[in-house]
Amino acid sequence: MAESNFVDYVKIYCRSGKGGAGSTHFRREKYIPKGGPDGGDGGRGGHVFLRANRNLWTLIHLRYERHVIATSGENGSAKRSSGKDGEDFYIEVPCGTVAHDAETGEYICDVRDDGQTVMLLKGGRGGLGNDHFKTSTNQAPRYSQPGEPAQERTVILQLKLLADVGLVGFPNAGKSTLLSVVSAAKPKIANYPFTTLEPNLGIVRYRDNRSFVMADIPGIIEGASRGRGLGLRFLRHIERNTLLLFMIPADTDHVLRDYNILHEELVRYNPDLAGKNRILAVTKIDTTTPEALDTLKSTLPPHVTHVFISSVTGQGIDELKDLIWRELNRETFHDSEQIVHRDIDGATPPDNPGENE
Image (cartoon, rainbow, N blue to C red; front, side, top):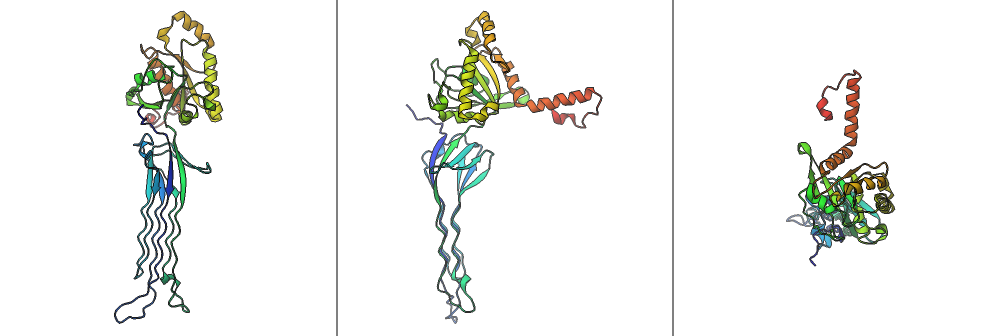
């Protein structure tokens, strides 16, 4: 089987540059046979940085670049000439990448915004030349400082997808089909479980040239938080989503039971996911009868906004987009309602009402 192009986990050995040594040199020119010390300083070693790049989507470019080594600083020389600093090394990663120390598991950083830069390793400082050590009592120092050694560590980089909507459901729940219908993404679609083996991202176009990003991850099964199925490998991609779209097919025996299983697996993995906004989509309604749908409604989880959809016929897709957009912009909609109420009450409307649209 061909190796996947989606890479969300890499381990990299990093080493900064060591500092250059200071020079022990004395001025020797014509008619100046015994000049004073003029040894220059060594150059600084190169730093190693992690930098977010919005043009990258996976860590595949780092798959075969497992050793990152910055250059060392050059040694100082005569005439107080300082050595050249080592070149810094920038590891370009997608937005949403988390770095941990491979040996201790220590959290290092999390780069989310394009251009955000974090120093992973500091280059060694260059040593001072003998010119710095001359004094009135020691006018010819014959020593200088060596450069500081390089730093090294092994870093684990993990990508957590940054998307507005994350699709949550059992295998073969219709997640990939929905993504292919509402966006230009072309995920693999087939009528068997675990068709999706890697996350897929799609940009969903909405009204008035607006859009949001939807992420489809491999299906979750009971016990995924303990490593069953594809387990923990892809659950982390749900952590960054603003909204969770639970998808349960209409041919299930009990929607509430399936919803509770999915919800429990997410909360076991990360309790913070319990507070995420969510919508329930009952999928594949074209495969069942209206009478069965009426019966199914009695098993829906309470206090969760739901919608019935069919990605094949397109039924309910526009309503689903409206619900998603409303949830993603809940604060904006709430502010707009407050403005309308103030206008009705006779309060002075804002000077630029268009700013709240």
